[in-house]
Image 1 (cartoon, helix red, strand yellow):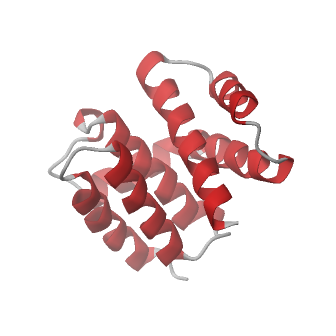
Image 2: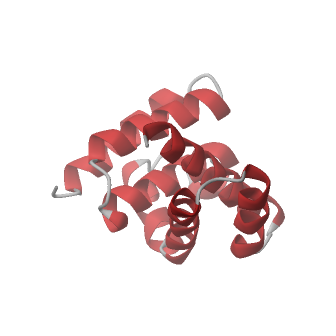
Length: 136
């Protein structure tokens, strides 16, 4: 399941990137990506839930990012970094289905794969602080 959940997170990240960069509707972005990916219904539903939940809680998530990375205004973060953080913070603070350490590790891996050279370290630092308040 680990590999398929990573694929689901990658698709969720891609959808969130589209939503953020070209103002695409979240449902349209994830539907297109899932159709192309051909994942199982269970994995598709996991990915779809990540996108809808992240979008639904985005204002609260962005406030959390601002609180734990005050030197980096959310709107000025690289789009990929901003959305890796949003996705992970949604899972840590609101979704509660995956252990915090797994979420942080997955986010760091996404940052290594899709972000800039310093992205992984930045993401890890912010999520380390957020994890401390997760209470689980």
